Amino acid sequence: MNWITGTVLALFFGLLVYAESDLPDSREASAPARTHIVPRYVEQSYPETHTPNIVTSVLADYRGYDTLGETVVILTAGIAVILILPRSGRRQ
Amino acid sequence: MRGSLENVVVEGVSRFLVPFIQIFALYVITHGHYGPGGGFQGGVILAASIMLLRLSLGEEYEHRRFSPTLATVVAAVGILIYAVAGLLPLAWGGNFLDYAYLPIPGLSAAELRYHGILIVETGVGLVVWGTLVILFDHLMGSEP
Image (cartoon, rainbow over all chains, first blue to last red; front, top):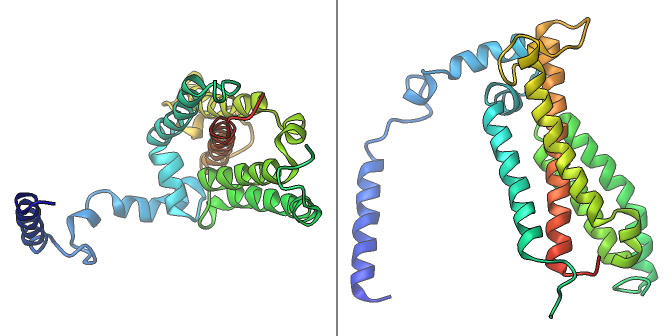
């Protein structure tokens, strides 16, 4: 690693640390991440889905479309491996 | 070739452990409603049990019980289960993946969502299971 790369990395690291000090505390109830839709999930997840695990209800119900996409990505990876690595073509 | 390791201890321990591993995988998939777990994790454990058998018993023997073709079929059936669970509510008047409109009689909307999540997690588990076995077979480069 030459000195230009090191200087750029150090400057960028410093920039990230400076920006991070300005972020709101995510543990506070008033943080933006906890005021938008999270209260709805926490309060309504069990009455709406009878699922005590909020992670599962968000993953498979509220955000089921995302999970469908993730699953298709996994299957696509498998199909790509089938196509580019022929099983019987070992060390031809 | 009996097994790639040809060791009676390895083979015996593997045969003994695999049923417990697979039962634990089913537990992880179905317990996703109540704690850590779900289709992704349970599918990985199921695939790990198949890989253990292939490593310890030898692929030629093991391919007769769980063939690479069957792995492909399992993965495809999994994504089909997920897609059908999304399309059925669409046909019965709801939105895509709105499990409250699944055509199962005698259940309230919340119970329908509960079972819809279980159906979807099962599909995810099958996809991960099949795909990881596909990856293992092709990366090992074994004969079909």
